[in-house]
Length: 335
Image 1 (cartoon, rainbow, N blue to C red):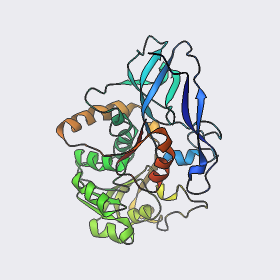
Image 2: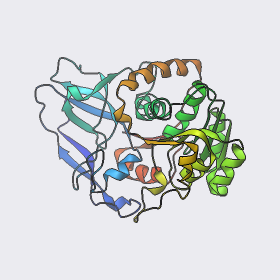
Image 3: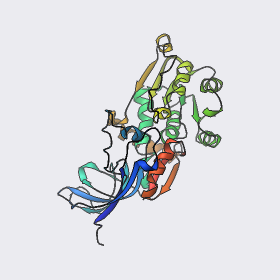
Image 4: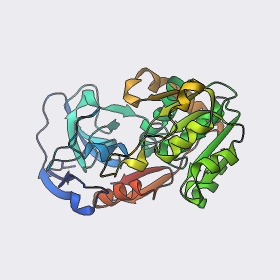
């Protein structure tokens, strides 16, 4: 089989002002470089689009470098190794790596993880066995220090992290798990996945909906949304409640500074803990989660949905739609 000499990728054509548009992206065809010692050529089969990528499109200092203008974007991907100049990775291996948004990737073998797709799909390593799953586990265990018997509230409950967070909370012994989502269909789905209660946050003030679902309060809030949700959760949290601040998707496209919770003073009297986190800060927990998740998957206690778009050309719109809430579970692009 002859190896490809050219490939296609998506470049950042402009920094979005507010919500991204198709004009902010550009599809390009480029030459593939020759393999150097220790490098491999990967044909990507599936790639991820994630909310955190919106922050990287801004030219601001953050926990990860911003995307460069007129250069290919990157992100999680799984693919098949077509050529290798490394003794550690063989042709035919399936690997997880960070050079998505392109059909082929040339990179050092040291920057990939060989994965087993004999019993799960390649895309599982971008979802339930990948960053979203590890994020849910880290947020509940290391950050919120969830305890058996806790009442847990998860915003964005139908998303990639939210679906898993609710199920993991139940597996860890939560007495009650409550979720919020954007549509009635999404609420119905998270209830099927084991949430005890859920509500459509667009149907009324979040504070009132959460009060109805948890009249005696909550102990843990897993925050994927920020804004009104965080304010509502602070009101509902009981003494020594904990917040795992994972994301704030309600504010990612804001063009002006957004106000903080108006009731933050309650954190004083209640002795609350609000802790932000980045999953990469807890590398030791990834293997622990995957081992536990394998058991939960086998027992049928853990599952997740995927929203799939086809082809590299569809990646920009998939990302735009993700930020608008069009996904249930993990949004992926199959190449």
